[in-house]
Length: 134
Image: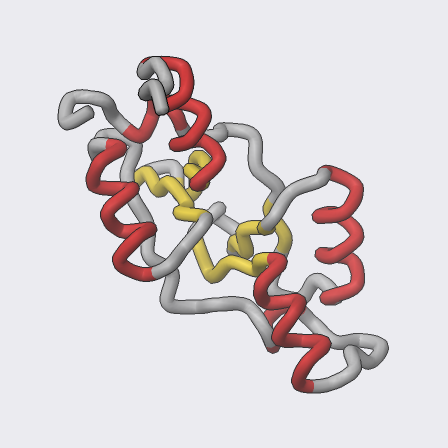
């Protein structure tokens, strides 16, 4: 897997929101699209943060979201990322090390270009390896 790159297994279709998006609206996007995260981007598609289903658990546990609550209040700002040229082993190592399920894929010129998830990695592994007999 050393020579397999993130670009091969990442999800290029991702949902983005601005940091001024209401939490309720971001949650609705996640429900409608059946996804586990939205990427928070700025005007030039630069990464500002990520909001995940785990963050919603925190939102509910800490306080009841009130009207006009924006994503900026709850998003993770110090986001660990990978590039499309990173190996999937490196991406998997980062996920294990930090306990992440989502890693945004960043291009220096284009900003956010995709997302690689634990589901993407599991799907890739299930296609290339036969299950071991038990």
